[in-house]
Length: 534
Image (tube, rainbow, N blue to C red; front, side, top):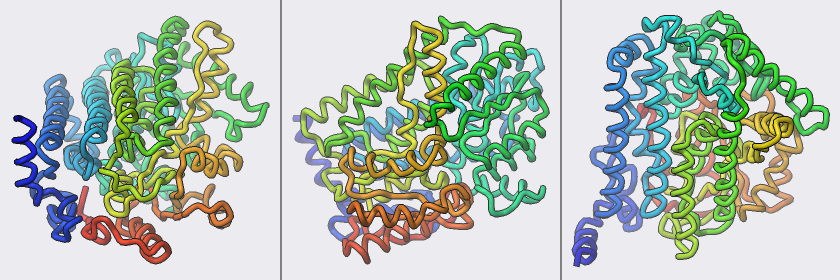
């Protein structure tokens, strides 16, 4: 009886569903937005059940935000006053709504499980860091057990210091917030350029430098760990950061071309020296038992991840698009075995994926036309790009380059083997392995795409990346020879003034309409102005 009532209501209200509107030529996803903004006039109607799932997820995230403020009200208030980037987090709810437009059923449920894990982790981290921030009045003694480390240095090794609290330094003011608000990082880029930094460098490196020069990093801990990852520009950024912050630091300069046999001994020595540096600066000792517990959590995450890949190779995976990409990036790069909550989420998600495969479930209601492998990070100010490309053209991004980061297991019984395994994992960190880890790693994109049964490769073309600009013609030629649909998508990472979101969409629109001669699933999102959106 209940199902019949729900079905009746869904039928009566289906005209408000943007997917139904697009299919019937009376609107679509963009119809409910105010012009030029990311502000919707009303929430997306997804049917009774899915609208309730979506709304309950919104309430859970709101509760996490409220808990953050309640746990540290004064530091949070000071944080809004001191740091420009804190205000951008107010756009989180609109950001999440855009991420999962068009999601229904199992993919919607998994997507919100993933996003809530990120929100829960970030809100807890923000409250904790601000309450220990010396810029906001915390004492040196209170702040002393926090360890700021470069965000692209996987924090698994820090589980060996259970009495310390690792903080991926750039995550809050730069890496995450540029996803939420495309307008925040240009300010920091301008700060960097006003100090004389060249205007044609990677906008991510420029933004991180600007955050440092604007004194917008929380001031925490007793010593800083920087790194050369993932590229030479990042190494220069680390120099600016440690000079401005002014704390004792160690540069974890891992081998760039890490596939070479000589790389592992060199990088292992760097990891050992990093651990020794923390022991010295924080007057503590590395606890192997605690590390092995963290490694077991990381091993479980990687074991489940590899099983997910088996489902990604089929058309029956309800874990899709940005829900896969953003979660894996955060779980691996920022959590990396340090938070058991993510293991719980992984266990729940893999159960849903197993059941979906048994049921031969098809995500997006079977509207997918193409399966794409996304190589290189999409512009981080446009995180909902995978959602848009599916809703508009039926292209499902089944896997992202960043999801192929270090998936090797860590030995949890032998210290010597464990150190080698830890080093190998650190060498294959965010962007490090595929973007600058050597030509063989870059060129493996075709094997990845083939293994995951993709007919399309999206290759993001960062116009300011000196390292990857030279491979453009080579990749185009190989794509033709191997028979892949291939689209270069221009972007400038965190500077939307150079290449806008619509400019990025235009790269896809031209290929799909001119080269393939296809019609969009939703004409309202082919071309629109969202320049004023978060």
